[in-house]
Image 1 (tube, rainbow, N blue to C red):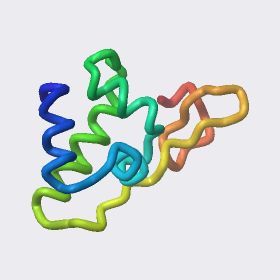
Image 2: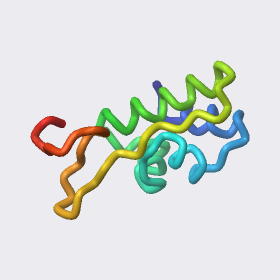
Image 3: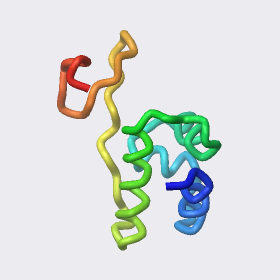
Image 4: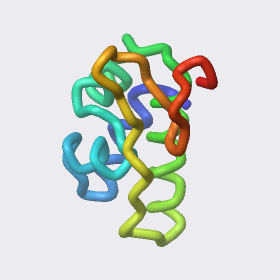
Length: 86
């Protein structure tokens, strides 16, 4: 998935960066970094691509569960309480 492709796919759906970030359950800053080609963490990229794929297939109200970020900043996968499981 090319980074420029993400932006063009988002725009083709008529979505703002904020809207795609909210639908993918990630921070808007992370999406901006993905679109600029400077974000390499896989989970966020997969979430964006999954959201776009589902919307392009007709599921226009797609919303993924937001990634939980505890007070210590360790990212947890949805439904887990253990940062070591990510």
